[in-house]
Length: 240
Image 1 (cartoon, helix red, strand yellow):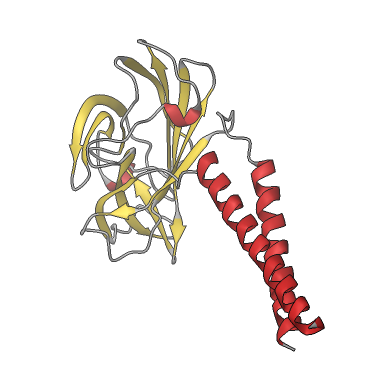
Image 2 (tube, helix red, strand yellow):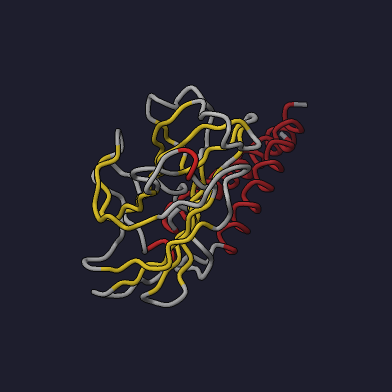
């Protein structure tokens, strides 16, 4: 009975190893042409009582020197998190020199909101999240906030290899931040914001490195080998 139980365990190990081998085979690595997207999910104390994520940020590389960055509000637990006022959105650009153009509101925030006049004000320190080398400000507060902000970056000192190469972490590890107005969904300018604060994002979790995946595969292969050896020992003992 023990031998049969161990054989069933060996089968599970072999299936697990086969799945790992398939994952290793399918891993391609390298740069991707896909947009680089991540959550703005870390909140400062002013809005930490409201669940995130608060916005999403996406970087789309359209050439080796031009990228479009888009921030989009999230709707969570009956609230929509609008962006506006000073430090409306902030990024840390991975370039020695760069320019910004085409600052737009992708959509309006909701009933009664007036599109704001957004402008680039250079570097700024965001409350709780450190310094960013590019900040986009709205000229006014809540009634001019937005649920989408987009702009174009141009690298004037080099090139970007992929969308994930356009931004780089600041001294505190954040790629981007936003000034968040917590608002009951659907947004209505006649109602005041429930809370106002800042949130930031560090980027998605990195994919496993090839060396790490290879070590996992070798470890599983060793386990399967041990299972086979143990089974032979049990079979020999049974025949004896």
